[in-house]
Amino acid sequence: MEEKFIVFGTGCFWCSEAIFKLINGVTDVVPGYAGGHTENPTYRQVCTDKTGHAEVVKVSYNPEVISLNEILDLFMAAHDPTSLNRQGNDIGTQYRSIIFYNTPEEEKIIKDFIAEKQKDYKKPIVTEVKKFEHFYEAEDYHHNYFANNPSNPYCSMVIKPEVNDFIMRHGNVLKAVKH
Image (cartoon, rainbow, N blue to C red; front, top):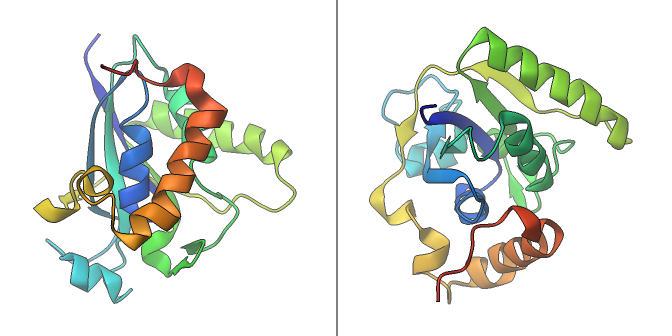
């Protein structure tokens, strides 16, 4: 079976990338922008909240190792899908919860998954579900941001606790640590 990909927005793509890179069966995670109307947007443009784009990650995965439903479950665990246009102190439509599907079959799986998952939440899930059209890769300095900038205050005070919490709750789906 060949590799597949899905594009997610879970707030800040630095955190999303750090979390999804840990997951067994995920073969690549690339930060970028999707869902807007501006072609080839820059980070600075996306931060204005005027491009319509969300900060996203393109997650490539091996479906023989991890299923789409399992990835969707981890997507939900990686952020608050009931928070509209924000995650924590990151506010704006660029931080919205969003999933981009590739096929009608994926759309059905995603929508059914969200409908079933809604039972676990008191507030409505506000995750957008849209057809994948364009993915614009983020500038080089955004790639592996958490790993490359561990002393950055945002990394140490926001991303590191989220990654550690994710590891504690989902250690069974993580890649083996290389020594």
